[in-house]
Every structure is written in structure tokens, then in C-alpha cells.
Amino acid sequence: GQQLNQSPQSMFIQEGEDVSMNCTSSSIFNTWLWYKQDPGEGPVLLIALYKAGELTSNGRLTAQFGITRKDSFLNISASIPSDVGIYFCAGRDNYQLIWGAGTKLIIKP
Amino acid sequence: NAGVTQTPKFQVLKTGQSMTLQCAQDMNHEYMSWYRQDPGMGLRLIHYSVGAGITDQGEVPNGYNVSRSTTEDFPLRLLSAAPSQTSVYFCASSPDGGIPFFGQGTRLTVV
Image (cartoon, rainbow over the protein chains, first blue to last red):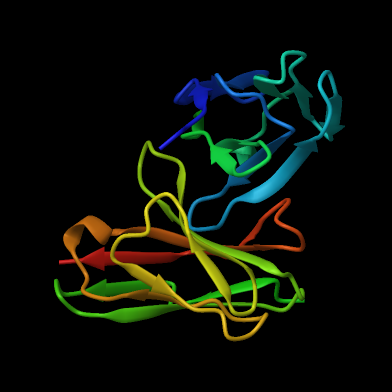
């Protein structure tokens, strides 16, 4: 099935570092969603984007809806231990919600 | 407010057994869906429902059945479990097919 290209697949970072991840697609989307999944839990919505060029923040998280409507990125500033988990992007066209494979964030001790 | 509740959280089945994964939501959402999550593959849609009495297939429906007799409940049935169905299953609901809210998942192992 169709998937978004989400990168990187995993990230090893030091506490306090900034983090950046992105999703790209060959399709145009109307909505971009970013979720976080903690171990043993279901995904939880972080940010929803509805317009090309839109830049939205949620605390230390910032996400943007790409101008071409084919990509989106998520930045996390000054990472802390509770940021560990898997981050998923999802894009919606007129018919369906397509999911990225996830970015696993690991903080080096 | 419980949101989306899935039971059981863990299950081990033998090949060929059948079982039902339960999902209930208390948000009066019309749209409900089932996903499976496998390592490196993100979330794949199994079945979905846009309202009571209406269901449709998603990306990977084979081996699974669903029904939606009420707005609140959307059970997923495995007819004859196979090792390839070892996965983590998530139920989600949304008011209009927009942003899905997820349950905590059911981790299923088929031996």
C-alpha cells in the first residue's frame, strides 16, 4: 500500500539537542498530522496542519505544512528524556489517511 | 472520559484459533477504524466504519471481519489466526473521519 517516506528511521540524540524529522510524498495532501507513540501506548496527536505553508507550534514542538503540499516537517527544540518514543506523520487526501513508518527517537544517556 | 477502550491488552493464540478484539468509544464518534502496526511499516488500515451498520475494507482486510451494530462498539474478529497476524492492533475513532483518536492497543501473538 501507499506510504509516506518518513525520515530518519531513528535518531540517537543527546538531551538538550534539537531534533528534526520530515515526511515526503508523491501525492498532494489536504491535511498533515503528527503523532507521538510512547512504549505500550497508542499514538497521540501532537499537531494538525490544514493549509499549505502553515507553521504551528505546541510547546517545544513546531511543525510545518510544505508549500507543495507534498511534505511536512516536525522540529523538537531542547529535547528532554520524555521526548523518547516513535513519531508518526500522516497525510490525508480526499479519500484516505496515509501513514509514515515512524521515526524512533532515542536519547543517549 | 475513557475515550477509546480496547480489550484485551495482550493475547496469545494458537494457529487456527479465532477470537474477537473489542473496541468501545464513549465520544459518540461516527467514524471508527482498526489498524495493525508492524515494525518499520507504520499503521495499516484493516477495516473501517463510517457509522452504525456500515463497514468497509481497508488496506489489509484479509483474515479479519468487523461489524458495527452500535455507534459505541466496533469489534474485530480473527477467523482463523495465523502467525502472520502477530502484531499490535489499534482501534481509533473520529467524529467525522478527520483526526483519529487511538486506543492503547492489543498486542497479539499467534504461535
